[in-house]
Length: 277
Image (cartoon, rainbow, N blue to C red; front, side, top):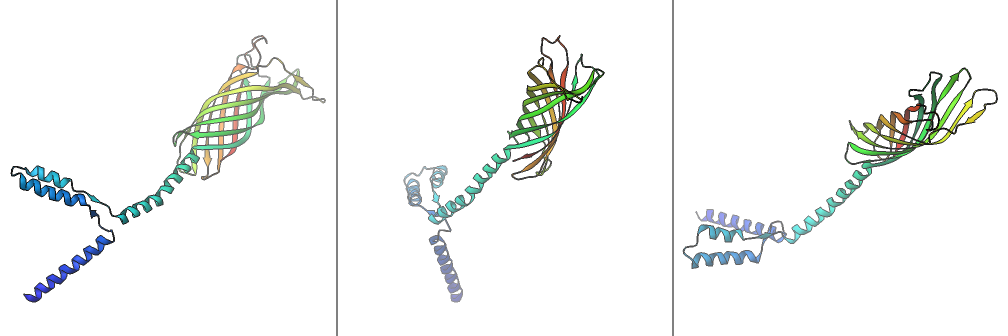
């Protein structure tokens, strides 16, 4: 029995030393002076008032507070400093993914339509170049704004002479864009919106030996329209490749109001390849 008591005493002493060492190194929370005061106050309440309910006693015990040790505070500060930077870095990347800018270019196939359009012409193949930017409000929905130089017109094939009707425009196209991210490196999109065009050149170039050019003065300067486009962006990171195909129809006749009210309107099919940054 004596030896068993010595074993228990030694075990209790070791446990005490271990607990003291843990408390000194701040691995356990420290009990503040407020705790001791509250405990004493609790004892006074229980001793002075025989009618004190169990709830009153529990209320005073609820007031006991344990506070983290200094080392725990330091550890929390180090953890905050360690993980705060990646949070702000992630926010920066998120903004970069929302905003993009780039350049593009490609082919255009334009023709004329309307009640007064004849069959004495063929579509004209030419090109367009543009600068653009995109901002995405969400991962799917955003705004696409583009400034573009586009060449339209038709190839004339009338008995009176063959030639090319050249209509050159500068355009502003603010469109809503819907992105469908199948995966990060492959993101199909669909865009639609108005196109505001301003004519900077209108002429007929005849296919004769002298390549005679006839400047046109009865052309509407402002030619608004509606456009839609579908495509895909390829790649991830700071640079992506843009591939798209779109179609635009325009609401004004190419002829000004004083040109006998002819109803002849532009329409254009375009294909593009570009780079987004």
